[in-house]
Amino acid sequence: MKSFLKFAFALLLLMIVSVSFLFGVWPGSNVTADEIGKVDTRFRLLTPDDTVRIEAFDDPDIDGITCYLSRAQTGGVKGAVGVAEDTSDASIDCRQVGPIDFKGKLRNGEKVFKERRSLLFKELQVVRYCDEQRNSLVYLVYSDRVFEGSPKNSVSAVPIYSPANPGPGSRCKNHID
Image (cartoon, rainbow, N blue to C red; front, side):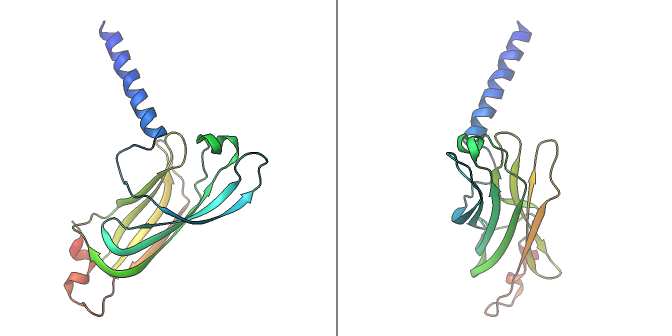
């Protein structure tokens, strides 16, 4: 009876995790990116083409910073039904688009964006660091899996400079936990 209960619990847990992945309901960053544009990179007859998408998202913890991502998306039958594993190719560029306002304390290496790249286990992530010496926020995009990541990555830095407020409040190190 105990082994049956363990099996039933494991099966239930597996079903919950699978449904969560399928519908994108998973703990972590709930930031969504706005699509700016896309280009087709491979024509596929009767199914969606492979594309490179350009998207933008705002840093959820710092007003005034927007990051732009370009990433490959696989089309075809697998892409149409959502089971294709997209490549790890991605690029990022972050810019100050308004007055910078820290909403609270930050952590170095904190995830500011994530997105599934396959049905299970692979995701694209953007993490943020504070370069204290240069007073800049550094954003890194990379792709990882549960068991194996990819060395493909891209980085972008946003200098924190405010001529109207040059005091200590404008230093990123003062907002890191």
